[in-house]
Amino acid sequence: MLFRSYTSRAIAYHKQGATSDKIPGFTVYQTFKNLPLFFTKNIPLGLLLSTWPRFTLAYTLMLGNAIKNGNGIPALKGWGVQVYYFWFHALPSRWTIQRNKRVSTEYIRSILWPDLPPDQTGLRKFRKIFTGKD
Image (cartoon, rainbow, N blue to C red; front, side):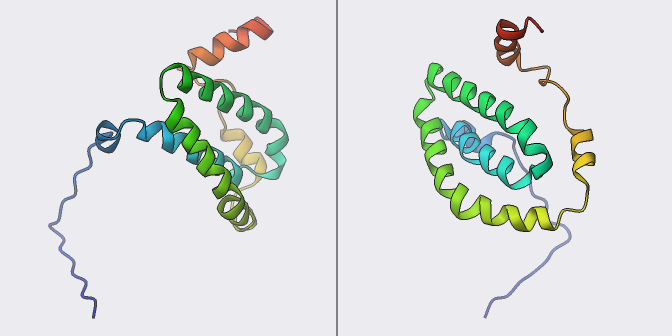
């Protein structure tokens, strides 16, 4: 028999980055595994055409940067694992998530960041090469 107990005085402490500090490449692996899955499950169909090319470009540039910075193995492992999860988790989950969403595609579009995040200096440099825009 399973016993459950509760105490209102319990305190849980969370140290941000504690796991990633102990396991080299953990954050890189998790990013490359989860980012495409998150995107696939949560972006509405009405936004896929406008966001997929930018996402693919950013993800590819992130992979190049990970390889350049010595994190190629965890990045490629994360990418490989997400390929499996894409078919057997993200796509089946997508239908349920999108069917049950409670906000409109237009609302989601309105809260998306309209440009590159301010801290994405590498992507800004890349964009400037092609468009001249900072």
